[in-house]
Image (tube, rainbow, N blue to C red):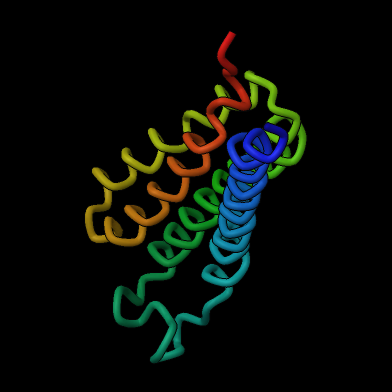
Length: 143
């Protein structure tokens, strides 16, 4: 009986905790890329610069500001996912489950706004749903 309980409750919960923590780390890297790397690109670099888009310095400044703003927003989401998955989600507290329910909604909204990212976001959505559904009984046990 103990083995079945471990297979049904504990192992999926640990795997899903790892999945959600990895998603938080991936978001952290994406935030770093938007905050630091992309705005630091030289406008004159023909391979990675802004020359293909515009040469107007005001437009380039606006684009850099937009990437930094997106990066800080993603950084906030990444910190939230990392902290919640490492604390409340790991302990099986319901508030943590509820606070991570916004992640699938967020990804679906981004799939609608930017359909060219749908293949990548679809995989991310499946990982998030698996991370939330598999340990469902840990958060809501049968009476």
